[in-house]
Image (cartoon, rainbow, N blue to C red; front, side):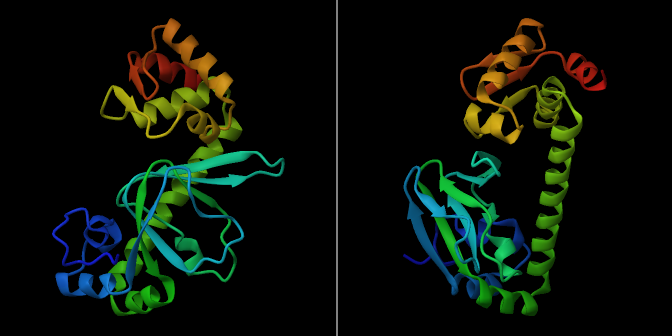
Length: 228
């Protein structure tokens, strides 16, 4: 089933993804013409490292885990993305194969856009190209920040910093991933994460509610951990 702009479903990929937000309806129709829709089941692999790229994958609904295997063959979670976000963009600009693995965490519908045809539209509508560059710049900044956090901070400092970042403007952190994936993202084992969350809770810094919710009780206390 193709993903058409004419659809009355307001979660339409072309409207949903930020890189197309500045296009007119007519221009969105052009993007929809080179787009197809595909649904993946929970735990189904969307693509693997080494696969040929050349497509832009936009999430219409669901969640996807992006990961890589390190030198020891252990999975390292890079990010978890949801509706309106996209992946596979690096392969549009490079002849190299894909370097990441993408797996659906739940039933997920993707709008898949043919890369070569999209690049022609990017030449025609430079706003799309600038939006892609903007998103890539933000991802690079987040990746460099995470590398710095992992390399220069203790386990406690890493966790404190991420909890503060994720709760900016809000006391509640809603995890959009399992604690195992969250631990992998922080470069620690799930057992270490569980121990540190328990320790933070006993110190009155946070309150853990269920599997996906963390309430920040003492921001100043978390900041002191980072500065120590």
